Length: 420
Image 1: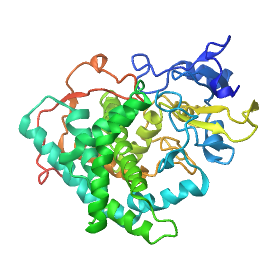
Image 2: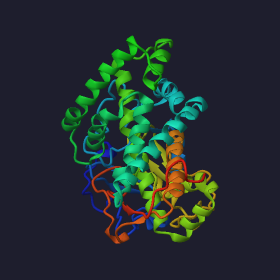
Image 3: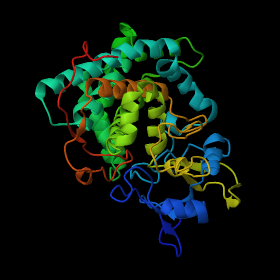
């Protein structure tokens, strides 16, 4: 039997440690520290019924993510958590996140310029800043309290990725609903197909319009580059690429933003330091991503018989890399549970590593840095509106973080008056 589908009730098999926000709101479940020290590569039973090798040490996680020849993305990234993510299902047309090698690079080299090229990033900054200021103006008009996650972070990242792809903010519910289905643990394959259908239909129409009348957006440019290449994209492949950018491009960033600000509000010393030294904002972003990123982990599949951390791993075995646990490895990051704006975060894995490293990481950095800097500048009195213990956290999702962050303030300074 393929070891990835052994009976999860096998004697001695450890249940996958799940996030426990009530015990550790800014880090992995407490069991990960023990496993990292005592059993850094160990078999676990996952919520979806598959079994996998759980890898928790920084060096081992980086090794797995950095070697796509030994560890394939064929299984999908969330086969351990999402009911719809069957690792044995054939790779579908345009399902590039489950591809390896040249097949994957064919997609990545067309998406990459839209989310990482200096020219595109330079154009993105003023657009994101405009959205941030508009959202803060709206909050100022409505008055406190507000939900930093739903009333600020989600609208900002939604407008940013929608504008980049070419989807108006008014049509955001299409990819919001699709994302909810994708990242909810109990969604079946049939339910996922139903949830994605409205978004795919919308994007099919958008592809047709952009073919006829190209615009100044990522989809138009991907169409043009694809048509000029040796392997032009089909309409369905373009739809799949656009859907991934939209679905993966808003809530992950919004959650890190809300979660990171929550961590700052819970640490007055670090918050005061950042307010007095806004030049530390880029470092704060990296530290937030290190501290909070990758909590759900990522699945890979062994493409050959191999070893990890001295443990033999058979071809076909699933390997679950615990990214957040790796980024909390004290051998790499001393006092890793602490938010430290002066920390050297070089090499953190919060955006992944290797060929499948997050292709949108540079856009995420811009959104996070601009949002954080503007909040500190325009809302100097920002504070939690409820005791920290009352902050609810998400459950049954691969996007780990607060469900709501109620905040209050004395005044939101006008954009033109807040000193930069």
